[in-house]
Length: 212
Image (cartoon, rainbow, N blue to C red; front, side, top):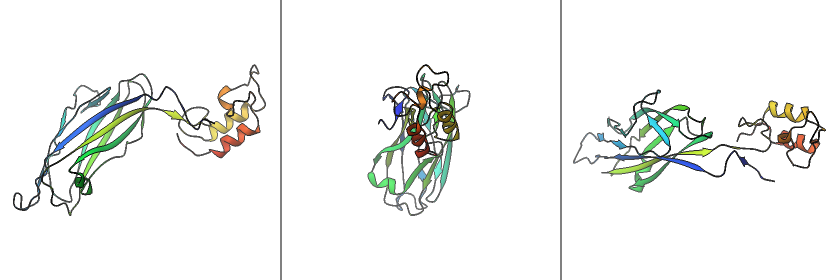
């Protein structure tokens, strides 16, 4: 049985946020370990803006001046400019040098959030610099924002991203029905055998609490 089904094909919309930061951490250059940096943004099908009205396009980020042990947060607004629901997936790629990722962490609590078509999501990126950062002069990394088509578990009958009581109620309401019956619900026929039976109920119960 197919584990997941998608509202569209395996289309993936990707936004690459290229972060180019200069890390001057050598004790001979900056004895106090201050980090100077800047970031550049490129977009592809997902809009990145500084304001919730999406009038100020974000084309670059300046993280300001940071020292080892500091945290800095930046607020951005991501607009889904596609015509389908997209799940925002954020990954960090292309570390240069590779060891830089041992000392720097970029996080976002809004990762894996669903964005509806033409809707805007407020996100906060937080860059953390470890206290023991050392032996790095220059570095860069990319942040990949992927707008993936939302997929649903077959047992998520109402397609809200979670198998819960509503799905139990829906399969129960269609129990015993066949195509043509007034209470027939094709989505509740999990095993696609043409009848809503105990197998369908048990499958929904098995996945209860799971999320897409």
